[in-house]
Length: 324
Image (cartoon, rainbow, N blue to C red; front, side):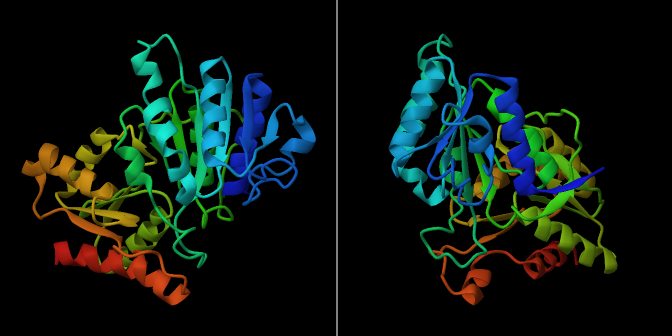
């Protein structure tokens, strides 16, 4: 199978959905002629023109508003917020309008809105461009939250998100765009709410998502050399959450580590850890372990930035701590 980058996989997904459905269009800052801040929409404007690829003013609230209005009136907009750090400027419309309209109209109005954005640290961009804010969005009923880690998952999940009749926030990690992986040329989609066991094991379950999957798989290789066989689960979508896959794994390993880049306090792992305690307590031989980002604004210094987010060694030490 061919190997392409995460960026190319997203670009292909957008291209295929634009060609498949005449109601799909893209809108966002610098996505047209420039091709997007991280090149995901490169060449799409040259191919499809202003009707399908629309540059917008530098106004997140306007971008979200365009998407909501278009979705309510029969279109399938894919809007881009350049950095998730700026999503707060459109959060009122996302949480109070997009997430609630279908429910409040009794299903008579659909909301097929996909909001693409990117998050995470790794490029030393400082506190205003490096946050992981997915936990904010998990708190809003009516939103779906997708965070793929591989090119294969990125393409399949983006296509599914665009076809969904509910609002989806699709979060891409800035450090994954150049990563490569196998992606079939034929048509495929991946259902939302289906986690994927990226590596099977019997001694400990590592639950993770987005860039931390890469770190967790590296940690699993190191642990394997030391006689610890870790199972690695990629959540892929945070909402809806696949508790069936998680429960099945915990019943096998009886120990679990949650690895996330967002801050530990009230982060994704806090909610997931409590769900595990509620639904899997009788299968646990040790407390749930969280390895998460530090509760600090993201430093500009590359050295300090690495200290603020989990590293491979942190995951290895965490696994040994609950096994040995």
